[in-house]
Length: 184
Image 1 (tube, helix red, strand yellow):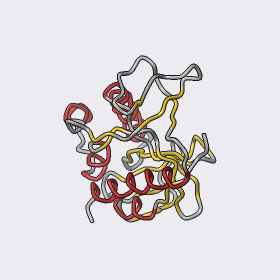
Image 2 (cartoon, helix red, strand yellow):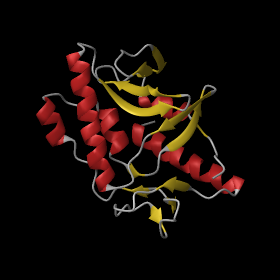
Image 3 (cartoon, one colour):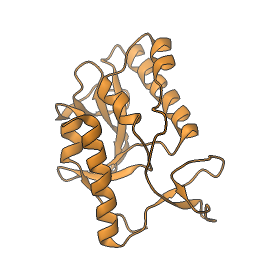
Image 4 (tube, one colour):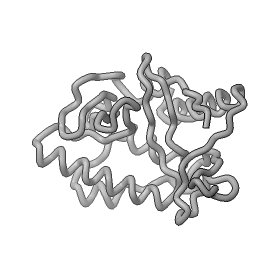
């Protein structure tokens, strides 16, 4: 199975779980964005219904990789170049996690800037380069990251190296992730 197939499957399982539970997909919205995932108007509480949308044109990491003088692992590029989506609440081996996604082009720019900052921090700390994919629900400081050399998915606290490997690759990680239905 490829990374895109595993991601497509996770999105399908996520939609099916919410449909079966009869819970609408709702996320916090940025009213200044023209996000293709937003369905309907943004509510007074800044929430909006959403639906995942395949990217018309895959996100281009070339400028950032050239600026950092470092290629990004192909699994990472494929993951963020496939879908616009709200963040996905998943369970991984009993641990509640959030897999980050981008609402649209404006959010993609923010994600690229945050990845650049993360890579520069890792260099400054003389740690192996990782790229972040998500957060543990229990702590905003606990990141889900992909090792840029090996492709292994693991956990690391901000400013530290990966301390636990969850899966040897992103495809395996996505296959073992289970959607969590959150009642809005």
